[in-house]
Length: 81
Image 1: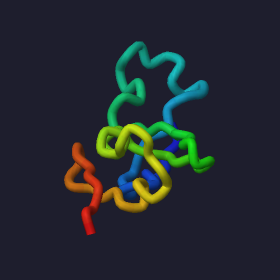
Image 2: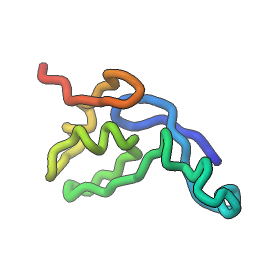
Image 3: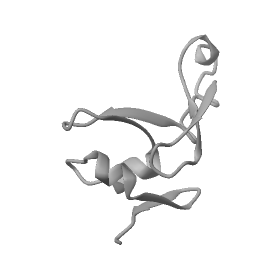
């Protein structure tokens, strides 16, 4: 599995997929510390970890991604500055 960093909070994430995950049978299936690339209506795309995905509003923009910060290993939030 490859790794990258979340565009929102910067935490290290695993990128599941490809031949590396074919024989995992549910163990180390990429569900922990993984991320997803989201394409927003404003035309931008961002690799976000699941805590950041949970923190962004329903109709996110690139500005919302810029405001994300890591609270701990399981939580992200939007800065209110």
